[in-house]
Image (cartoon, rainbow, N blue to C red; front, side, top):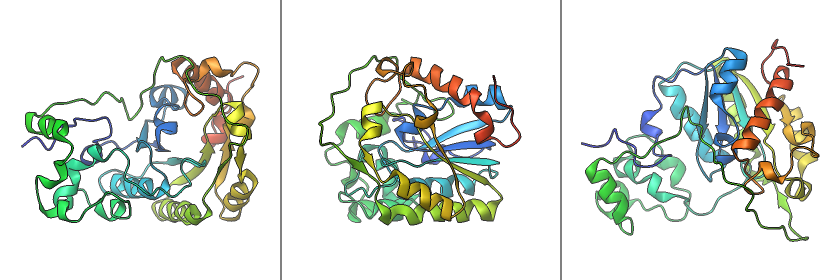
Length: 279
């Protein structure tokens, strides 16, 4: 009875129809926190949307793109987040409470993507209440039809000030080359639908960015398969894009999003063909 409601910001797989955005940004929290569709639409005149899944990498996001295209016109552009948080292999289900609505009877056809994660049980697909074990609060929200969705066109951000921890000196962050194939799967999907695919690396703090290994390898791979790539970290002025614009090493705050909007305006021609960058 309450299936159409959304009790969580990422309980949106059943609400992906009739969006028909001309530009979709695809990624995890480093997409839906950083890229403001309303500003992007104001600058380009193209309707925009953040198609995201919190905490997940490219395998599940590939499934979400497939789901989106089932009930929407293909966008003109798909802007794919490509960084170590996306190109990695996840072992366990994250935020399982956001999928409880969908697991039973697999109404949104996403169980094939979830089944590879530890914590997924096929018994939950056919036993209505079993999936709520340990999630009584979610059961009540679904039973009562509580709505708790406040993303706008898939976007939201925070006013939180810097609260990130200092990185260990030996910290490294790498890509998982086993997941490269999903980038090519998205490329082929876009090619079949006439969608222009661009890939990009959203902003990080200087410390975390410098700890990443494999940047040259992923750039070489993208060049080999013919996918354009934008590294915003190379375009940022680190003297002005300081930690006060982040609330942790991975995510900008609302002030940082304003600076990100300015950066996009300046380099809009890298994303949208024939667009003129603002001086």
